[in-house]
Length: 443
Image 1 (cartoon, rainbow, N blue to C red):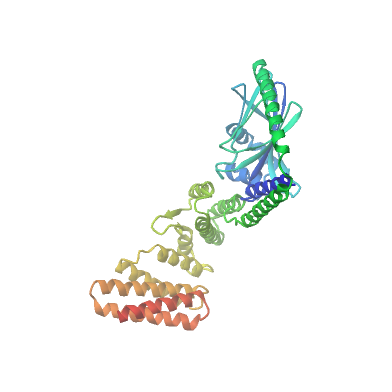
Image 2: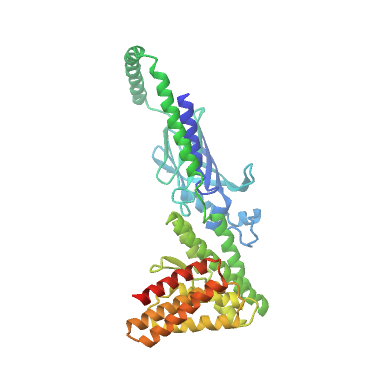
């Protein structure tokens, strides 16, 4: 009973660990026959597509023709990440077949058949695999190795390799036999002393084991709730969409180009937001995905950069700016300009009077042109903060008249937000800002 409980707990914990990043586990089966090692490797197709860009027509699926066209890149990837050695000597592998494969839940994998031919019968076998560690440093490949009439399970990671001696030499056989005799002798001695122990201790021990297993299951249940924010599948889809929009932005038709520019900006803005959410929630756990996102967007001419002072990723808004140049009164003019104003606000240091004045004037013009825009509660809060910062800067410069002016403007903007948007987050922030202004005035 004790063994069953702990075994079940271990299996469940392994399952949770494997699913820490949805469907990001690979599988490999190896069979050994004399001097030949054959392998069937299955890698999540979304992950491989993200790395090797298999879907060249960007239609959201990898066709057989696209797999065939990418055969050289796939062969190179397998050669880089799967290494087999026989008796300490590396054996080159050949990629015999590639295809798409679906598991019972219809999740797609890239399946590859490989073979490794050694010049001699396999004596000592070593297999090392570190697939997809470019995306997930701790990526696992669940392996099954069939050899000498039996199967062994092994989890391949970048820090571990499978090693096994299939044909032990004469000296090793003798040593094992002697060791076995010694173990038998020790076990006989232990059995005599164990037989004297009271059976009354067994129930309490069992209770302790049950309690320990229960705690493990509780820990598993809590761990299983871990959220996944940035995934290879979602990033892959976003990058494909951005690549299509980049192509469409070169269209000669003005309407098509303008629409593509705005949508490209929206995709870049959304990606930067997801990257920020990922870092805020999990730190640099997904460093591989983050780096790949930055590299691939840069290739597309989309600039997303990390602001060390603000500790956030920001899109530079270039596509929104291009859209506004071509369609200053277009259907997306208001949201495009709003995004550019918000980027400037969040990256501002709030220290330069000229910059603050220009930013406040730009927000005022926007509010005048788009009085009913859905994001105006947020924009008015930005404006109130600009006024508050201007009041502080002028107070530091001993300019009492301007300090008083901008304090009045900040206060009026806060009151307007609480009046026009009473049950919003912006209204609560405005109330806090107002209390700060009043406390500063009293001080």
